Image 1 (cartoon, rainbow over the protein chains, first blue to last red):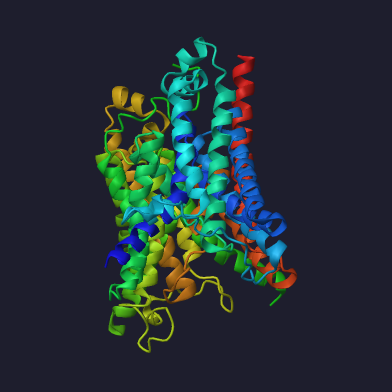
Image 2 (image 1 turned 30 degrees about the vertical axis):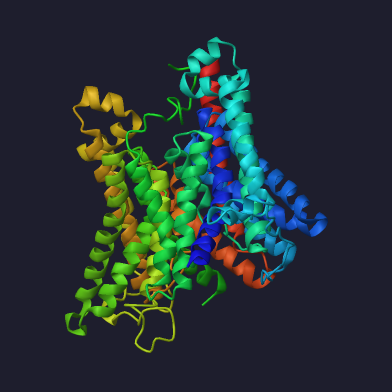
Length: 306
Length: 300
């Protein structure tokens, strides 16, 4: 039974990793007052980019190209939502549609109409000596693909930057009180643009993780709403980096439950488990009502007015 | 029959769910509700219509059709009501909740057509065919065009009249345009008005699904909606959220999807290209609108 629980916990961290990466990036984006609904688009673009990159230069080229593709999609969103100050929700929805359709089209153009199962090299688990021997949580936390360790390093780095540096303060100021930030000389559009790009970068890495650390192939629409779940995770994590990762673990558990129940031969319909993360998102958002810790200017279109 | 006529008829068949779902999106957006969930509401409506279609007795004859449409409206409205309630009671962003509900609807259908609603031989993941009494009558003999297209036109004109001339329409527009002003100056219960508009929007999307089942597919199966609810956003925005305009943009996108299907069959252009075009249309519309705003403010 111990091995069953260990396998479950290992699955939790594995499925949580891409969600946490995307949510970490979106946390930074939202702290600047921009909600990027197009995150889903960055994730799917990152997944396709990973396949293309890995085919040419191996796993790490896959991650690099995936991140660039995620960034590129976010840049389209930023041009509309930040530069032109168009509605963030509409811009983000359009960018998601664009990326879902565009990746589907490109994939068929590049790899044939049948969408032949294309296998990419993947990252195997990389156990950390000693730490991975800790009973129960050792394998879950320290016998993961290396991208999970990148995530571990990113969380304190992003926290430190956001709460301890001058530019991090500028970012948070725009999200909380744009008028004050403008008065203090923060270049709002530029900071917001960069914050969106950072979110897209990690969105791309998240999509690349789906391909290079999990599926080993690209499937049309394989992001499967993870961008939107990540946005819910940001809310649940109270807009801070560590909170986002912890909330992502909850969702990782929801997804990993299906493997657990399948292994135990449950007679419940499998769709019930597939629905679980989506239903959990609804419940979690309802439970975190009274969004007091949301950046005050989140989603606001015009910063100079009030 | 000429090929052109066949294309036009196909185009109008494709346009029907897009016009109806486009109306649903237009009404919600006018109320300031970002209903991205027309797809899930449409699927809920299709499911309810199919359920009526396979479970009613043949003795009730043509009454099965209005029953199926009403059931579709109720199911679509109920599906939207979940998101409306989460929004008004808990402040849950409807963009997220409606998208989650889209996924839940898709898996729900997947369960139903492999479980309780599967056809009796249990071979195919779909329901049996609906009774003929629930079939939408053909509009043009010898073509696939059905009366659902007329229903779409009637709904569009009705929605236009309600939004433009009725007190309810005014309250919806006021709540969407400036909720604070509507609340303080207009004695409008904004939360209530937007919730009702949200549910009506879902009901209309549900009717779109019911029409699709009773007029085109005659059964429920997975992928019953190839993303109609998302295309509907482009349809509504390109029409400037005007219900009458939705007729034109719905037909335009119906033509686009018909052509995309033909291109995929004949020259191998992936049909996913259609959603790229939709996205570009949405982005172009908002870019033009924003550039106009910028010019207006910089002159003033």
